[in-house]
Length: 353
Image 1: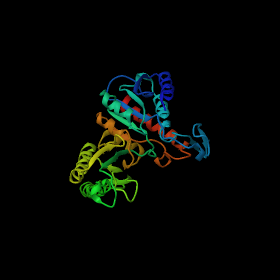
Image 2: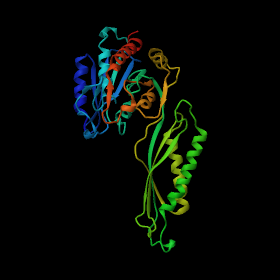
Image 3: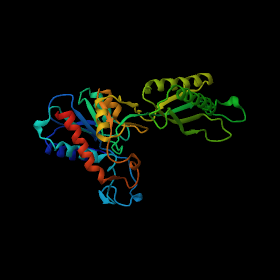
Image 4: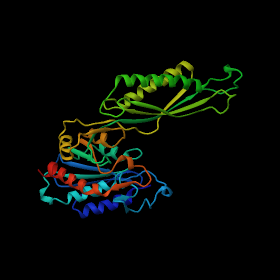
């Protein structure tokens, strides 16, 4: 679905609040919104994504598309992940007069974070420096997050030739080739887990999951095609492109040995791992403000794309990731004012001082 209606709604809110607004086309029907208040450079970015995951409203106790107050919570699709953050950022910006801004505040609303991250990728590729510091308002219960793992989801297809199972010479089994490749892949996983370790993460090593396999059509027919889907979660310091090259080389070795054809296809574009130094000004200031040590998480965000632009980036927002992508998604009401006050403190420190 297009996100243009929500982008246009936000554009009206921002313009009414005194922001300069740029609506950036991403793909057909998809847009980023970049809103700026104040002049100068090296300012502060607040970023949130406009899309949500699909939902099944039958599983909800209330209409997911209508904000519902119940039990000191706001229920609704995207209330936690993470539409409320953009509204709180606008509210925080209005605490200051325009002449107080010595460096700009930029609030960004992106497209397609839940799928391709094409909105954040375009902002990074655009090459414009939008700020020196960035806070991405994903739900972290207002705990600063400075690291997360990268994500790859890949497909390997082996093609051989089918034939009657009574004579192995009548075909070339893609399934047997896949069996050999999986052994190489599991050995590769072991090598990665011995080489890379980061104690800041709950799961301290890279993980690789074999999630889906399909091949052949009958027990009495040599398997001509076999396909495997797998997921690799890698640590900061590991390069997604290098990992793909290494896995492709494993598949090529099996294909050459067994005279099979092989096709390697990323199922998603992949998300780089995120790392912001613990000594960064933004991280140290947020640790002081929240009285919490910054953490590392397993889920992916748009943060690596802002880091790639030279921003000190921290992921932090109201609500818990445990409520995201769930029926009856909610935001605790008692986290709204603390979030607004925290964002006001960030604006004061990085835009007004």
